[in-house]
Image (cartoon, rainbow, N blue to C red; front, side, top):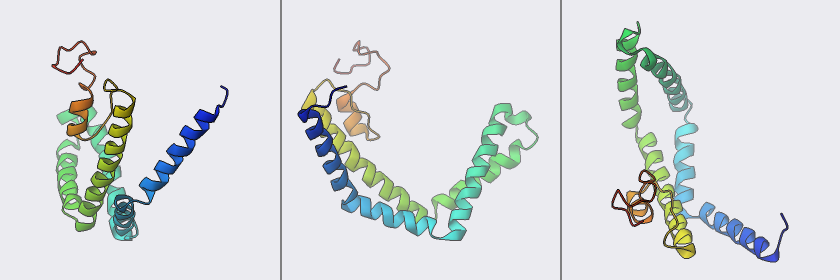
Length: 148
């Protein structure tokens, strides 16, 4: 692949955009929320324990109710998940992640639309994905009432 001046400009612009996102308020809030969670050793240990429990949960799911630890694991995963969900720092991290993801989705939407209205833009935000694609299930045949 031959590098052209236009390609270098695009790459430089992408790097500049990346730096702008990293310097955004949303990125700073995410970093602060991340550190609030993972600099807390007890909370980080609790999250790691939950990750190990999720692995056990996946193993139990393969066998379903016939697994000897099924009831115990199912109860533990619900209780531990609820405890983490109700933790103020974890909730703050999730909120910050969503805000940063929304910013990235908006930037992707703008870039995609500047190329073409037909460009499919992956997004975690239904507002952007409903306007940008049908979700990929209809094969762009229009069967799902998308704009294909």
